Length: 149
Image (cartoon, rainbow, N blue to C red; front, side):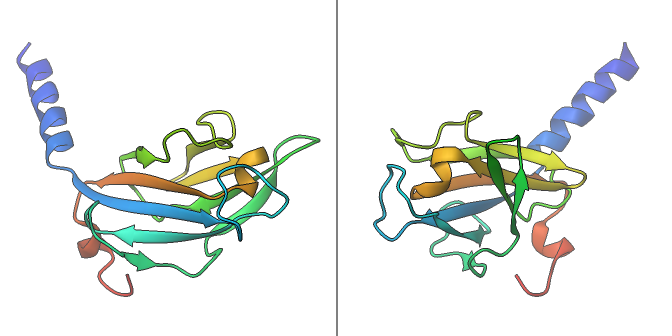
């Protein structure tokens, strides 16, 4: 029982001591419409030390994004969230009542190896949307990546 208790306490402590960072994937069409249109949205990632930090540190448009064929009729666009080795990644907020992007249907978070991505597909590719994401690390992000960001 003592060993189990130590494991539970250690796990809870690790989750509570986590070091959070935040990301915002901003995808814009020319008309800024939440409804899908003919134009593919252009996206850029914003890195933030705290959720309320504005404007944050913007990456170049399209940086870290790539297209993969999903099935015979659709593609998915994946964008790197730059949360390497994060033990937890979660949606912290999203546009309420968005008309074209639906979680698990045409956008979702996914882990590949040590990296985390968000993918978008179908109608969500052609609409303005802002995805707010949280990442939790075992040690401070700036300690692991002190230069550049």
